[in-house]
Length: 113
Image 1 (cartoon, rainbow, N blue to C red):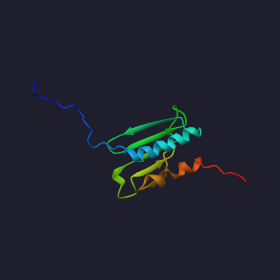
Image 2: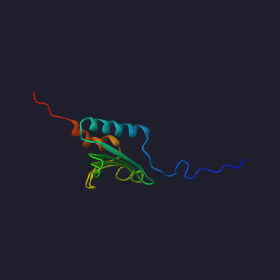
Image 3: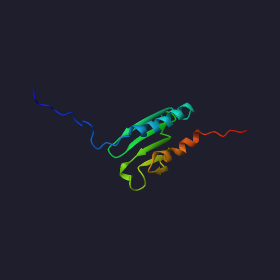
Image 4: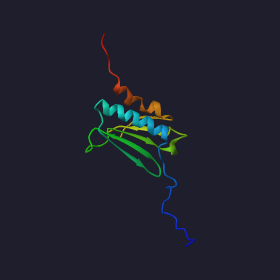
């Protein structure tokens, strides 16, 4: 009765994940893009090497943008990357804010006087 069997993969050691402030920033942008009518669905993939947030125009298509967090690149190019629909790197950096800037610019509308 005193034998405790550990749950397999408890806590998933070595898994890369988004921290709460990072995920809040990404989901805030996602909510604004949904309200503007640009995006309709998202997916989150938490792997051993990289965490990915993918935003879709429609659920049946490839993601329009992917925000990737890869801690292995922290000291080189920066651990954050914004990947476009065709797989090209749109922006890479050490901080999340500047990496999300190209998407946030889409929300701005010019107003004529």
